[in-house]
Length: 357
Image 1: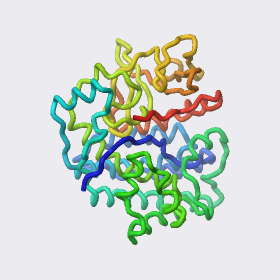
Image 2 (image 1 turned 45 degrees about the vertical axis):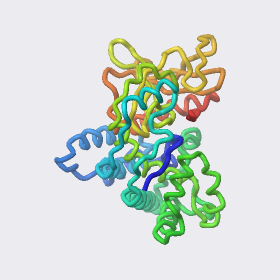
Image 3 (image 1 turned 90 degrees about the vertical axis):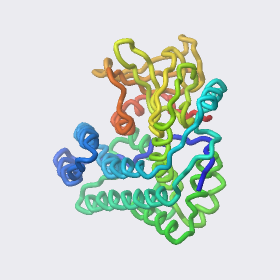
């Protein structure tokens, strides 16, 4: 079955901030460490080591990191089942010249059965991670404590359901609704893609589902398809001068200052694309007045990270200095690892503004 894609918003999906003692978190991290990746996917071991390092440096993110640790192998495996997609050179060039992302408006070959299977597996992961968190809570170690209110506010993108259910129970509700054919995932993906998510509000309410968690799961289940489709398209984006992704139309997760030349490139976590963008220009509103563009730096991290802010639209984007581009599978991890930058921007009333195609 095919689904027409218009635009997708990146949700920086994660869960409530935990606040544990160092000893307790270390035990929890050890218990959640991944099994040895298969030799057929040696890169996975590299990504897992980076994820473990992030966990050790960000003790308050244990639950979110546990989610990534469980889902990364699933997302990489699911990409193998994606049907190929191509565009001819003329179409690619015409869309780039017109400022239209390549995947927008195309008849994309979504493998519905495989994507549905991935969606259900993701539900089970949330159930598992949430249950583990609840087990720790029963022992007196609260993984849901709001020890860092500002960070919790930034991370709290998944509600606990209208009836106060935990994320584990909320994920189980969603999974059962799909398995019982009460919830049509094709309809969910279509609403997400077309920007008509509000049309699902009545159905979601009737089924008593967590809308934020449903949206996050839907986006994650689509991510392998967009990755594969983007990798199959070879295009020169030198003439692309927009803040949205030239492949899928999503907002960038962050910017990178790459190599000795210091070229600024934006990175998309949905499809993995990267593209050049002027350093002295707002990604969101294209403001290039240097008087209204600013930077926020965190003490001790000036050489590695900063935030570019815009007084015109009050948006910001994180910037990472790196010699080599961040591997695609690490984009989500690095985005999570730099959450403290989002908190710094939020404290100064700047927002992570989504770019719409």
